[in-house]
Image (cartoon, rainbow over all chains, first blue to last red; front, side, top):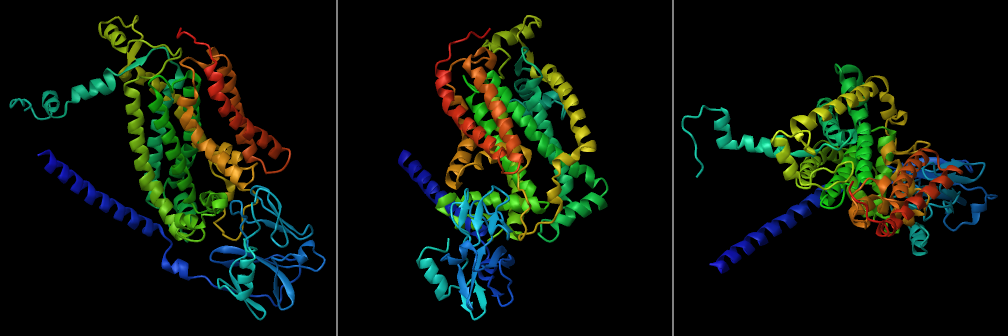
Length: 168
Length: 409
């Protein structure tokens, strides 16, 4: 008798367990971003009329993109993370502090960003000057197309930066 | 088979007893649930919390009737429709906002009362632990509710707090996007936090409240001296009419009448805030609609989260997260970190007395620093308070281990 009861118990437990796993997976998938959210989101930036050392803010996948045409006398001018488009050097980064995601403010006269949340600082190439941010501002996937830059697509220049470990 | 009297009148006491055991239920849960006499007004905080939760539930039900959980309409449905179109909509909103803030004040008083009188050990461990789960559930409820008006503070608090789940250098951005349902807080995020706030978290909270009451029933509540006595024997004295001699009173109606008195005072204070000082619970920054391209100049949480936020702030990202995680779980371990068998008020426990007041002052200090912008000298004070917090908890097992035994009374 006890064998039959054990079998029933195990069969019930097994099916219930399978059902629970299935339900958990379905719940996980329900919380995933929708395909429309994942598919959407290529932004084209036209850099032909950007003034030097002035912060330009664009939007890509709901996130702010910070663009600065870096001046030659800026300390950050030689930084390898800058992107050369049509002979000019640009910082193009996701404008969310790598600490907890606030938008840092740019102070052009100091040539640096200061985050209002926890006081982190970045230079005009997005490199960290003062903790708590653990890493530089992230460079989004981009493709250079003449004087334009397409965000969301991985061009050869982006791949080169990525291989050198400079994008994040 | 139970016996049912065919002559019992429907819904008469006898009829009800045979079907539902109402007299037994009443006896076990109220008229013969014994509470020590040796207590003060701080013992009323539990019922004050239950009443405040009731107020939150009722005001929430009315807000729910006009709130629209979409990123386009949420802000206006709260700030225009509910505030200026719905009759007395402002009342529900101000009650809801003030109660959400005040409930944490009472929770902290309730917690520190428990810590002061040692009401978390010798059979009362589960009361403490279920209470801490309630604290976490209330925090989640408060946070999810804060998202709903979809103002600037809602959006940016949502951004910052969900980013915590990337767990620093582990860079779990996929997890963060999964929680949000998007790259940034958006419609998917607002809808799911709306669901959490109005359904899942309230269900969990109600379940936890039942558990919290349940854990209290057998060990009984503590008293001002931590005295251990035979509740059965004291109850017999009461029932025999020796009410002066007995050390206990029944929960209902004696203790409850004291509770209701304290609640009366509390609700005068509460409605004073609702009608004359509701603005303290309404951050002006959140009266700007959410904008993903503009961070407010200074992001801070509501006052009740400031102490744990401040622990996050002075450190580098990973260490900050570890310190933050430490602050979130360490209170759960209190019954096991306190190595002393003494159940007594802190002022009779030697070094523990100093520990208790230092912890309280430190957490008030962290709270004040968390509100100030992250510049020196404030960030320096904040750092000192954060280190002190961690040091206090590390020191706790050692100082309580050395504690001398003290008699109950």
